[in-house]
Length: 111
Image (tube, rainbow, N blue to C red):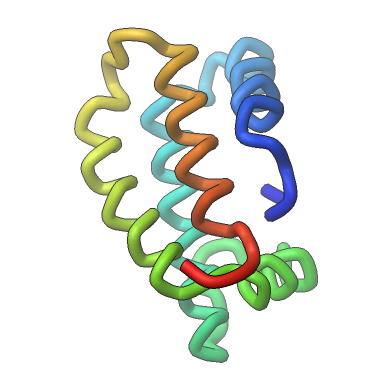
């Protein structure tokens, strides 16, 4: 979940994790990303994370570098994506799109 990872590399890592762990479905991945982004948004407001507090230092660094409008946009995108996560037409493109949206959300700099 580091903020400086290439989207295609991240998609490949997620694909490998899903193949190794059948319980990690596209739906669960989207749900986890929603929680992660939500916690990053909370950190932007100096609030305690709700879901993944055990990842404190890494989460703080990513939240600090990420622009709030990008995080909010990603959260909205994830709500839409979750509707198609159960049956993506092309699983690889689904993961790549998801990874691209995540990396765009946590990229440093202005939105």
